[in-house]
Image 1 (spheres, rainbow, N blue to C red):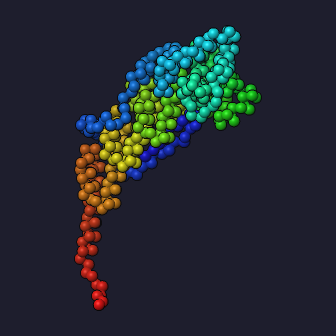
Image 2: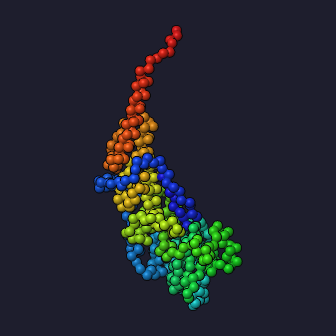
Image 3: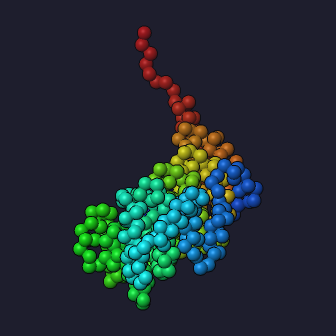
Length: 388
C-alpha cells in the first residue's frame, strides 16, 4: 500500500494505493477508546511539533524568523546553523558596493549568493544549512536563502511553484520580477540568453514565464519553506522510511494550518497540493508498510489510533479491510480456518457488524468446503488391484 510523495526538483509521479482490498460497503468505522490506547508508543508521533504551531501563530515574519523556520524544516535548527545564515546576512550588509535601489539590490543578492555560497546544483539538496557546508543546492534551498536575504534587504518576495520546480518573484516599484535562483543569470530571466543556455542543462527543467499563468502558481514565504519538509518526506519514502515521514507530514500541515489538520477535498487544479491531503497519504502509507511487513494487527491499531485524530472514513476503511483480508487470506491459504476465525474474533472490535458478517461468511464457507473435501477423500474406497 503505497502512494509516493511528490518532490519539488525531482518529482516522483504519484502512485495509487496498492493493496488487496475486500470491501463490503462504505460505512463509518467507530473505535472504542481502549483500542487506540494500545501500543501507541510503538507508532510514529501523531501530534504536531509545538514549534510548528508556534511558527504558524507568528505574524510579520522577520528574516531571522524565516531563517529559524527554514532550519527547523530541514531538521537542523542549531545555533551553529543560525550563525551561518547570520554571517551571510552580515557579509551582504557590509558589502561596500551593495546598491540602494530595490531592483539593483535584488539582482545583486542573486550574484552575491552564487559568488560566495552556491557551488554545485544537486537535485535533492533541499536544506539551507547544507549550502554553507558544501555549496550544494537545489531550487528550494536556493530560493529560501534568496528570500531570507531579500527580506533582510527590505525587498518583498513571494514564490512561484510549477509542476516540478519553484523560483522566486520579487515585488519592486509595482513590478513583479521572476528570479530563477539556481542560475547566476536568473534575475528577470525571460530575455537573457545566458540564462536559457545554462538553465535547462543544469536543472533539467524549463523556465515557465508569467504569460503561462496556468502552469504556475504564486505561494507565500511559509509555503515555500514548507517545501523543505515536503522534499524531506519524499526522500524518506523513497528510502521506504514511512514511519519518519509521518511526523514530518504532520509538522508541515501544522506549519501551514495550525491545529486544523483534518483532510480537505483535494484541489485538483492547484499546483500546491493541500498538505492535509498529503498528510493523509503519509498516514496511510505507514499503515500500508505495516501490512506489507505482515503486521496486520499493528496496522489495525495504527488505523484506530491515527483515524481518531485524522479522520477520513473511506480511506481508513480501505486499510482496515485490507488488513483483515490479507491476514485471513494467509490463514486460509494454509488451510487454517481456525486461525482465521481466531484472528477475526480477537479483532472484532475494529469491525462493524456488517463487515464482520462478511468475513465470517467467507471463513465459514471455506471451513465447510474443506470439511466436505476431507470427508469425500476419507470415504472413497481404494479400488486399485493388489498384485503380488
